[in-house]
Length: 243
Image (tube, rainbow, N blue to C red):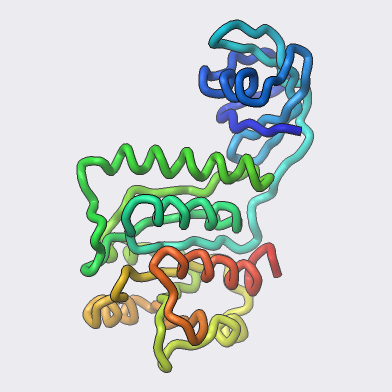
Protein backbone atom coordinates (compact mmCIF):
# COMPACT_ATOMS: atom_id res chain seq x y z
CA UNK A 1 0.00 0.00 0.00
CA UNK A 2 1.32 3.46 -0.88
CA UNK A 3 2.71 5.59 1.96
CA UNK A 4 2.59 9.33 2.42
CA UNK A 5 4.34 11.57 4.94
CA UNK A 6 1.74 13.76 6.63
CA UNK A 7 3.09 15.58 9.71
CA UNK A 8 0.79 16.31 12.64
CA UNK A 9 -1.84 13.79 11.54
CA UNK A 10 -4.11 13.08 14.50
CA UNK A 11 -6.82 10.68 15.61
CA UNK A 12 -9.32 9.37 13.01
CA UNK A 13 -11.10 12.10 11.06
CA UNK A 14 -11.12 14.21 7.90
CA UNK A 15 -8.00 15.93 6.62
CA UNK A 16 -7.31 18.19 3.64
CA UNK A 17 -4.14 17.02 1.96
CA UNK A 18 -1.38 19.50 1.11
CA UNK A 19 -1.30 20.30 -2.59
CA UNK A 20 1.93 18.38 -3.26
CA UNK A 21 0.51 15.32 -1.47
CA UNK A 22 -2.75 15.50 -3.40
CA UNK A 23 -0.81 15.78 -6.68
CA UNK A 24 1.34 12.78 -5.77
CA UNK A 25 -1.61 10.54 -4.90
CA UNK A 26 -3.98 11.58 -7.68
CA UNK A 27 -1.75 12.59 -10.60
CA UNK A 28 1.32 10.43 -10.05
CA UNK A 29 -0.06 7.29 -8.39
CA UNK A 30 -3.50 7.60 -10.05
CA UNK A 31 -5.38 6.72 -6.86
CA UNK A 32 -9.17 6.96 -7.16
CA UNK A 33 -11.80 8.06 -4.70
CA UNK A 34 -12.35 5.33 -2.11
CA UNK A 35 -8.90 3.79 -2.41
CA UNK A 36 -6.80 3.32 0.71
CA UNK A 37 -3.25 4.44 1.42
CA UNK A 38 -1.02 4.87 4.46
CA UNK A 39 0.10 8.07 6.16
CA UNK A 40 2.90 8.38 8.69
CA UNK A 41 3.49 11.34 11.01
CA UNK A 42 7.29 11.26 11.15
CA UNK A 43 7.21 10.73 14.93
CA UNK A 44 5.82 7.32 15.86
CA UNK A 45 2.50 6.48 14.18
CA UNK A 46 1.26 5.17 10.84
CA UNK A 47 -2.41 5.32 9.84
CA UNK A 48 -4.67 3.82 7.19
CA UNK A 49 -6.54 6.44 5.22
CA UNK A 50 -8.99 6.51 2.34
CA UNK A 51 -9.14 9.09 -0.44
CA UNK A 52 -12.36 11.11 -0.42
CA UNK A 53 -13.11 14.25 -2.42
CA UNK A 54 -10.84 14.98 -5.37
CA UNK A 55 -10.64 18.19 -7.38
CA UNK A 56 -8.12 19.43 -9.95
CA UNK A 57 -5.48 20.47 -7.43
CA UNK A 58 -6.85 19.39 -4.04
CA UNK A 59 -7.97 16.27 -2.25
CA UNK A 60 -9.41 15.24 1.10
CA UNK A 61 -8.94 11.99 2.96
CA UNK A 62 -10.35 10.26 6.00
CA UNK A 63 -7.88 8.92 8.55
CA UNK A 64 -9.39 5.58 9.52
CA UNK A 65 -7.21 3.77 12.04
CA UNK A 66 -3.71 3.51 13.39
CA UNK A 67 -2.03 0.44 11.95
CA UNK A 68 1.50 0.66 13.31
CA UNK A 69 3.69 2.37 15.88
CA UNK A 70 7.46 2.66 15.78
CA UNK A 71 9.21 2.67 19.15
CA UNK A 72 12.21 4.85 19.88
CA UNK A 73 15.47 2.98 19.15
CA UNK A 74 17.19 1.36 22.12
CA UNK A 75 20.48 2.92 20.96
CA UNK A 76 20.55 6.41 19.48
CA UNK A 77 22.85 6.52 16.45
CA UNK A 78 23.91 9.95 15.17
CA UNK A 79 26.19 10.83 12.26
CA UNK A 80 28.06 14.12 12.04
CA UNK A 81 29.40 14.29 8.49
CA UNK A 82 31.60 17.07 7.19
CA UNK A 83 29.75 19.13 4.61
CA UNK A 84 30.27 18.09 1.01
CA UNK A 85 28.85 19.71 -2.08
CA UNK A 86 25.47 19.19 -3.70
CA UNK A 87 24.23 15.74 -4.57
CA UNK A 88 26.92 13.98 -2.58
CA UNK A 89 25.48 15.38 0.66
CA UNK A 90 21.96 14.59 -0.52
CA UNK A 91 22.96 10.97 -1.13
CA UNK A 92 24.54 10.60 2.31
CA UNK A 93 21.41 11.98 4.00
CA UNK A 94 19.15 9.63 2.05
CA UNK A 95 21.19 6.54 2.87
CA UNK A 96 21.72 7.38 6.54
CA UNK A 97 17.94 7.89 6.83
CA UNK A 98 17.31 4.48 5.26
CA UNK A 99 19.74 2.97 7.78
CA UNK A 100 17.69 4.31 10.68
CA UNK A 101 20.00 6.90 12.21
CA UNK A 102 18.32 9.13 14.78
CA UNK A 103 20.06 12.37 13.80
CA UNK A 104 22.20 13.82 11.02
CA UNK A 105 24.24 16.84 12.10
CA UNK A 106 26.33 18.33 9.28
CA UNK A 107 29.61 19.90 10.36
CA UNK A 108 31.89 22.53 8.80
CA UNK A 109 35.57 21.72 9.29
CA UNK A 110 38.81 23.48 8.34
CA UNK A 111 39.09 21.55 5.08
CA UNK A 112 35.40 21.67 4.22
CA UNK A 113 34.87 23.02 0.71
CA UNK A 114 31.11 23.48 1.03
CA UNK A 115 30.57 26.35 3.42
CA UNK A 116 27.79 27.49 5.73
CA UNK A 117 26.24 30.25 3.64
CA UNK A 118 23.09 32.27 3.01
CA UNK A 119 21.41 29.22 1.44
CA UNK A 120 21.52 27.31 4.71
CA UNK A 121 17.74 27.43 5.26
CA UNK A 122 17.05 26.28 1.69
CA UNK A 123 19.52 23.40 1.98
CA UNK A 124 18.06 22.33 5.33
CA UNK A 125 14.56 22.28 3.84
CA UNK A 126 15.80 20.15 0.96
CA UNK A 127 17.49 17.72 3.35
CA UNK A 128 14.26 17.34 5.33
CA UNK A 129 12.37 16.62 2.10
CA UNK A 130 14.94 14.01 1.08
CA UNK A 131 14.75 12.36 4.51
CA UNK A 132 10.94 12.24 4.39
CA UNK A 133 11.05 10.62 0.94
CA UNK A 134 13.63 8.09 2.16
CA UNK A 135 11.36 7.23 5.11
CA UNK A 136 8.41 6.81 2.77
CA UNK A 137 10.38 4.45 0.55
CA UNK A 138 11.99 2.28 3.25
CA UNK A 139 9.01 1.86 5.59
CA UNK A 140 10.42 3.98 8.38
CA UNK A 141 8.06 6.13 10.47
CA UNK A 142 10.39 8.30 12.57
CA UNK A 143 12.17 11.01 10.62
CA UNK A 144 15.74 11.68 11.68
CA UNK A 145 16.54 15.01 13.23
CA UNK A 146 18.56 17.08 10.75
CA UNK A 147 20.23 20.11 12.25
CA UNK A 148 21.63 23.19 10.49
CA UNK A 149 25.35 22.99 9.67
CA UNK A 150 27.48 23.84 12.68
CA UNK A 151 31.17 24.25 13.40
CA UNK A 152 33.13 21.34 14.80
CA UNK A 153 33.51 23.17 18.11
CA UNK A 154 29.74 23.64 18.33
CA UNK A 155 29.13 19.99 17.47
CA UNK A 156 31.49 18.84 20.22
CA UNK A 157 29.68 21.02 22.75
CA UNK A 158 27.26 18.21 23.60
CA UNK A 159 27.10 17.09 27.21
CA UNK A 160 24.97 14.00 26.66
CA UNK A 161 26.58 10.82 27.91
CA UNK A 162 27.58 8.48 25.10
CA UNK A 163 30.36 7.27 22.83
CA UNK A 164 31.92 9.79 20.44
CA UNK A 165 33.77 8.33 17.47
CA UNK A 166 36.03 10.04 14.93
CA UNK A 167 36.34 8.04 11.72
CA UNK A 168 40.02 7.85 10.89
CA UNK A 169 42.21 5.94 8.45
CA UNK A 170 45.37 5.02 10.31
CA UNK A 171 46.97 2.36 12.53
CA UNK A 172 46.11 4.25 15.73
CA UNK A 173 42.36 3.90 15.06
CA UNK A 174 40.52 0.93 16.57
CA UNK A 175 38.08 -1.21 14.59
CA UNK A 176 34.46 -0.55 15.49
CA UNK A 177 34.08 -4.15 16.66
CA UNK A 178 36.85 -3.61 19.23
CA UNK A 179 35.23 -0.39 20.45
CA UNK A 180 31.93 -2.25 20.77
CA UNK A 181 33.58 -4.84 23.00
CA UNK A 182 34.86 -2.01 25.21
CA UNK A 183 31.53 -0.13 25.26
CA UNK A 184 28.74 -2.66 24.65
CA UNK A 185 26.03 -0.94 26.68
CA UNK A 186 26.08 2.68 25.52
CA UNK A 187 22.77 4.32 24.60
CA UNK A 188 24.19 7.01 22.30
CA UNK A 189 26.82 6.62 19.58
CA UNK A 190 27.94 9.70 17.61
CA UNK A 191 30.19 9.30 14.57
CA UNK A 192 32.16 12.24 13.19
CA UNK A 193 33.36 11.87 9.60
CA UNK A 194 35.77 14.22 7.91
CA UNK A 195 35.89 16.03 4.56
CA UNK A 196 38.11 15.28 1.60
CA UNK A 197 41.60 15.39 3.03
CA UNK A 198 40.38 14.42 6.49
CA UNK A 199 40.47 16.33 9.75
CA UNK A 200 43.47 18.55 10.45
CA UNK A 201 45.88 17.62 13.21
CA UNK A 202 44.53 20.48 15.33
CA UNK A 203 40.97 19.23 14.88
CA UNK A 204 41.94 15.67 15.74
CA UNK A 205 43.71 16.82 18.88
CA UNK A 206 40.74 18.93 19.91
CA UNK A 207 38.33 16.03 19.36
CA UNK A 208 40.49 13.61 21.34
CA UNK A 209 40.66 16.11 24.19
CA UNK A 210 36.85 16.01 24.11
CA UNK A 211 36.74 12.24 24.69
CA UNK A 212 36.36 11.26 21.05
CA UNK A 213 37.77 7.85 20.12
CA UNK A 214 39.54 7.11 16.83
CA UNK A 215 37.51 4.52 14.90
CA UNK A 216 38.55 2.60 11.79
CA UNK A 217 36.23 1.50 8.99
CA UNK A 218 38.78 -0.86 7.51
CA UNK A 219 41.80 -0.87 5.17
CA UNK A 220 40.34 1.38 2.44
CA UNK A 221 40.09 5.18 2.24
CA UNK A 222 36.42 6.07 1.76
CA UNK A 223 34.99 9.14 0.09
CA UNK A 224 33.61 11.85 2.36
CA UNK A 225 30.00 10.94 1.53
CA UNK A 226 30.60 7.18 1.80
CA UNK A 227 32.19 7.16 5.26
CA UNK A 228 29.12 8.26 7.29
CA UNK A 229 26.96 5.69 5.49
CA UNK A 230 29.46 2.89 6.12
CA UNK A 231 29.75 3.98 9.75
CA UNK A 232 25.98 4.04 10.20
CA UNK A 233 25.75 0.50 8.79
CA UNK A 234 28.43 -0.90 11.09
CA UNK A 235 27.22 0.95 14.18
CA UNK A 236 23.65 -0.26 13.61
CA UNK A 237 25.01 -3.78 13.18
CA UNK A 238 27.00 -3.64 16.44
CA UNK A 239 24.94 -1.47 18.79
CA UNK A 240 21.70 -0.69 16.97
CA UNK A 241 18.59 -2.29 15.50
CA UNK A 242 20.48 -4.34 12.89
CA UNK A 243 22.39 -6.26 15.57
